Image (tube, helix red, strand yellow):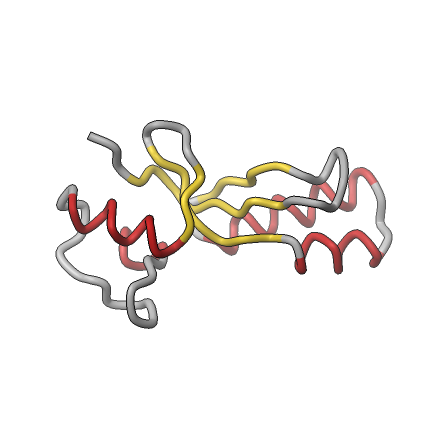
Length: 99
């Protein structure tokens, strides 16, 4: 049974080495990881803007899949990880729903 493991942000179309999935307990942790990576590689604001604009917030599952907030909510509800969505707007999962 697939479950949600942690928060994730997937960055695409920025270019190597920025593209990828960044993990954390909360999405803010993912953002800090993206910032650290960007500073280590290139301190340019151009890449900060690209990373922010090309990032999708979601979650990593036990099947090592990145899912968006809506699919994450379906998985967490169907598997009983959570009983209801409390923090999101509508049908979206937020890390605060999990912890």
